[in-house]
Amino acid sequence: NAGVTQTPKFQVLKTGQSMTLQCAQDMNHEYMSWYRQDPGMGLRLIHYSVGAGITDQGEVPNGYNVSRSTTEDFPLRLLSAAPSQTSVYFCASSPDRDTPYEQYFGPGTRLTVT
Amino acid sequence: GNSVTQMEGPVTLSEEAFLTINCTYTATGYPSLFWYVQYPGEGLQLLLKATKADDKGSNKGFEATYRKETTSFHLEKGSVQVSDSAVYFCALSDRIGYSSASKIIFGSGTRLSIRP
Image 1 (tube, rainbow over the protein chains, first blue to last red):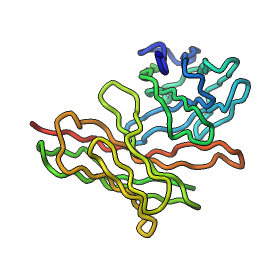
Image 2: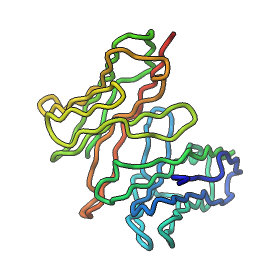
Image 3: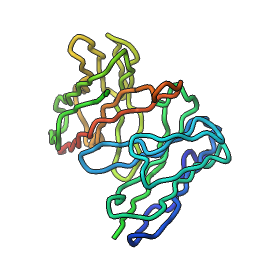
Image 4: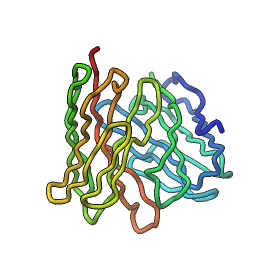
């Protein structure tokens, strides 16, 4: 098993550009989520999904879109990048929507918006 | 809302020293509590958990006890090693609105550095 994979590892965008951060898991997990990690602020939940076709907003959803057309993939789209979105982004998955603490995290994508 | 507060770092210790990283929480109800660890360049890993009051979570020599009376979940290790250098996050589970799903609320993290 590859676990949770994320691409790209690093990305630089200009303000206003759009892009998609990819996340995939091969463990047949129900629950997937996206977090952003900023210095001194821990991880904050952006969006989450409890199964294919079902997504919902977390704490900081503005400026991001998600979809979950398959169990395996959960891409995060930045519609119009802003410098405030400079961060490290982590995707995570869990086998059970009721126990998301058993999360497996991907290695992260470091995004810089200039 | 629910929240987690943990001691600010960085914390620097010598090898074999005793470690305590403080964590307190604010929550309605009875959340589960966790410690995650993030090694350099990696994602977070669940280190230990406790799902009810007075439970003790333990793993890799680390321990933490769920103390409802003091709303605390301090992380301890009796003798740290250089390989324990990482960022440690205290966290709790929280229901998302009225759904059956839960989310994890993380503290801000404590960077630990161990000197040989």
